[in-house]
Image (cartoon, rainbow, N blue to C red; front, side, top):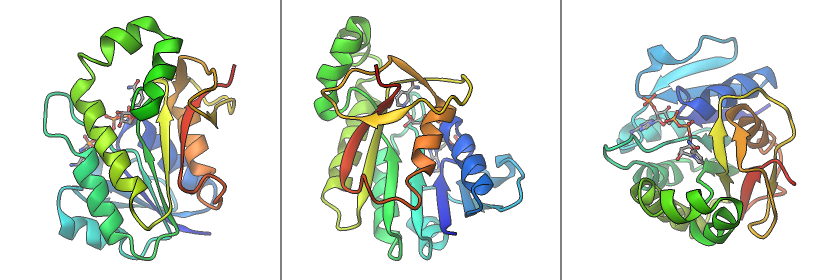
Length: 209
Ligand SMILES: NC(=O)c1ccc[n+]([C@@H]2O[C@H](COP(=O)([O-])OP(=O)(O)OC[C@H]3O[C@@H](n4cnc5c(N)ncnc54)[C@H](OP(=O)(O)O)[C@@H]3O)[C@@H](O)[C@H]2O)c1
C-alpha cells in the first residue's frame, strides 16, 4: 500500500479521490487549506497545506509515494495550478509519479473540445475559461519538462453524478462523452496509484463513444 497525497481534498473531484484511495487501503494524506473541512475517514490524515507555500508543500509531500492533484483555480481569484504544481514537483522527491487534473480544451485537446461542442469550444473556452485554462496549460508545460513521471488528465465537463466506472482515458483524437461525473474521474485517477501505464502521457477523461 502506498502513501498517497491528495491535493485539493476538499474539492469536488478531490473528495472522491480521498474516499476511493482510502477504501483501496492506501495511507491517504488529504491536503487542504482548511483541514477541518476534510471528510473524516479511517486511513485519511488531514494536513494543512496551501500549495502556494513551499514550506507547507515540503512538509506535506516530501516523503509520499504518489501525488494526486485535484487543484482548481478559484473563480476570479489568484491562479494556483501552475505555481502550486511547480511547488509539488519540487518537493515530492520520493514520489513515483504526480497525476494532475487539467481540462479538455487545453493544448491539443482544443480541437477535440470544438468537435464535441461548438458552444464550449468556440464560445466558452476563449471567454469565461480563458484565464484558468491558460494557467492549466502552463501547469502542463511544467509537468512535461519535469524529471518526475507525470500523468495529465483532461476531463470533459464535470457533473456530480454517480460513480459508473465507465470513464476512461482516451487520446485527443478520440470521441468521448461531453460530460463525466467527478466520481468517475476520481476512479480513473485512483487507478493510477499502483500503475505506471500512462506515465508521461496526457489523456482526455470521459466515457468513450
Ligand atoms: N468544472 C468542470 O466542468 C471542469 C471540467 C474539466 C476540468 N475541470 C478542472 O477540474 C479540476 C477539479 O475540479 P473540481 O470541481 O474538483 O474543483 P473544486 O471543487 O473547485 O476543487 C478545487 C480544489 O483546489 C483547492 N485549492 C484551491 N486553491 C488552493 C491552494 N492555494 N492551496 C491548496 N488547495 C487549493 C480547493 O481548496 P478549498 O476547498 O480550500 O477552496 C479545492 O479543494 C479543476 O482544476 C478544474 O479546472 C473542471
